[in-house]
Structures are given as C-alpha cells and as structure tokens.
Amino acid sequence: MNGGKTSGPVRRNSKDKIEPKMTEETSNLESSVLVSGSELRLVLLGSAGSEKSASVNIILNREEKIQTDTSTEIQQSESRQGEVNGKQVTVVETPDWFCSDLSLEEVRHDVRLCVHLSAPGPHAFLLIIPVQQSTGVERAMLEKMEEIFGERCWRNTMILFTVTDEEQKKNIEDFVQSGNQEVQRLVEKCGNRFHCLNIHQSGDDSQISELLEKIEKMMEGNTERFYRIKAT
Image (cartoon, rainbow, N blue to C red; front, side):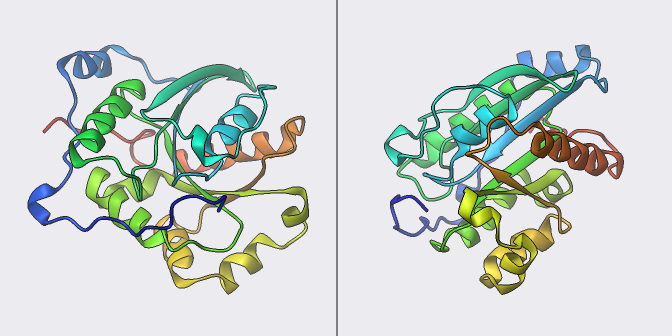
C-alpha cells in the first residue's frame, strides 16, 4: 500500500468488543424509510492509503483530484451522494478502523456515526484492497469486521480490488489464487465476490455499471436486501 503505517493491529480482550448501537433517531429512520430499487447505500472500508476516497469519486463519477497520500486519511465517517445509473447512491467512507491510532472509544463512536449515515442499513460493505504487495493487515480486516458487525456481515460484503493501468493488465483471479492466504480467506468469506476498480479511469462507466450489477446480484441472494444493524 502507499507508505502507510506498518504497525500491527492492537490486540484487545473480548470484554472490549465493539458493539454497534443504533440511536433512537436512527431506529426511527429505519421504520420510516421505504427501501426501493432506486436507492443504494454503500459503506467503504479499508486501511490507511487504500484509495477509499478515490473509489468514492469513481463510483459517484466525480472529477475531484484523486488523492492517495495517507496524510489525507479522514478522521471520521463521511457520506456523499449522487445519481448513478438512475439510482440514488449514498457512499459512506470510513476511516482506518483496522490498524490506525484510533482509540477503542473513537472507533466505537465512529461505528455509531457510520450506522447513522447508512441508516436504515447498508446494501453492501465494500472492503478496499489495493492490488499491491500485502502489508499484512488482511487478518486485522477479517477480525475487526466480525468484531464490529458480526459473522452475518459477510453476506453483504464484497472485496473491491483497486488497481492502476499497469496492474489492470494482470488477471485478478490469478492474483487472488497466488496471493497470501489472508487475502484468499477474505475473498472466501465474501462468497468469492470481488470487483476490480481502476482508480485512474474515472471516465469508464462500464466498470461502475458492472460493480452495481454485482451488488444487485448479491442483494438478490440475501433474505433481506440490506444489512440491518440491530439495536443493542
């Protein structure tokens, strides 16, 4: 990845488990919002320097300058909206929950903010992984996803491999098969669902159309079309 911190994830006791909670306002919103095929809510997750912001711009077809410097990493979840292929799309970009210097309380607070921004629940979690040399954070990704959202989150999760023009030439399936075991475990957890996104091809609508088709197919295979975070 892009020169980010390489320190390993902080180990915590089970009593420190992060419990996502819905505020009363979010709970009320859940009962009042009609989920329709014209609306899509996405939550982007990844470590520092994983091109989350660039991915948001590509998905929403924004012409903003792509930033890959890890110093631009956001400090709390942010949401942006736009119309894509006739759908009203909300994309929530999250900070680095996996290997950052955020305290446990800061992570808990931001999880609650993410829940609010994606209410009544995200249709898909997109786990951003650059197609570069592994930095060893994949295990932390797997553990923290289950710690925050529970085992059932994988039904609504897809890997989004971000690539450059040169990396685009490589066969992404070969990369997965020849990559480290932690990347393979993440792909398997997601039901072998992944998509390749070239962050330097902002004008290529086909890669976003294909991504949305994959998300729709994933949603159709689930009992509930979106991931419902229950109040605790």
